[in-house]
Length: 479
Image (tube, rainbow, N blue to C red):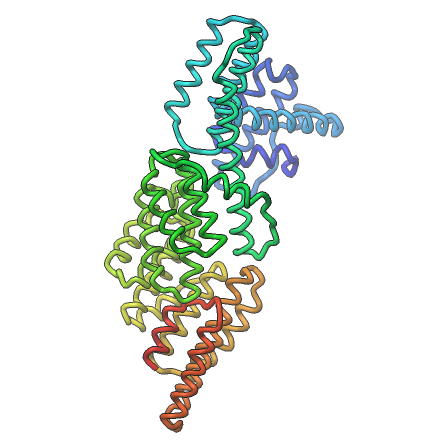
């Protein structure tokens, strides 16, 4: 029973959901089976006790035997209760969509031909829409369904006259389709870049033609404007489209839902990362400006916490831009917003990053020794810092040994994307060649040293992507 689908699903509910489901299952409108009510309350009580208990490993369910000693009967009740949980989840989704509720009510009112009630629901929809006047594909679809319902109400009256709702239905559907289609195309293009997928977007040319002929004056169709820039940026690696994306997102910030705005900024951020990995280090400043924008609009928090990967990326970029004061302030200010179980580890690692940037090498190495790395990103980050410190201290023999073990470490871990693995291996390849040249510099003639250095620079330019390209460029410039 503790391993049953219904128990595992209910166990994943938060306290508010458990309370609501208890009310749901007890309502005779949804359930008239008294044993299902008993079983639901029994499971919910056990889940609450186990979540509050000190020993959470105890998964037994107390009181089950009082319900029934027939295994087949219990299995039947479990299956029926699971169906009720699914209905509850569907109802939760429906209940959150206030616009759809008003439209559904209108649709049903068609059967009663009561103008007063219809007008009341129309006003409620319009009031709710005015309170949630965001530019989103979901809102455009709700408008389409609403105008479709109004047009059906008009047709039911058998009045042969012009009704504007058919035109509004058409326009809302066009906007919904164009925005949703463009978002899907952007997602396909992005996944093709990030995970080397083979998605094939369709109808690109006619959509381009429609958008290019569309009037966008006066904040018209902001969602379509933004996603067209994202599309152009992804498809053509277009820096101008990137800048337009940033400008439009900031200009229309009040018109987008937080999750929509976050997705737009993620596209921009990933573009910066690809540019940086390809050697365009000026995009570090762009990346940091996006981070500051996200912080200002509270877009980085998930369940009240900043994900450790975001925390790490922010520190890395702050260091790359040499904005040490802001970076230290960020680390201390938002340390409390990391999850408690990783807070100390993440803070120490990122402090080591900052110490290294400030050339406090001994302090950085000491902190790295105190950290237990939870995933490959921290492992790669730590070894990269060690590598950079050894290079700065001219400990070339130790550095070559580290590079060899580093390469094995990268190759052994299968969780990295092909893109990230290639970037790290290219970094190690270049750094090893630089170190080998440094070791030979004492007996190489000036001309030979220069020629071999130029060969390495040509190789560096030919390789793509390369992790830590800014650092590599710096050491090549100073060789």
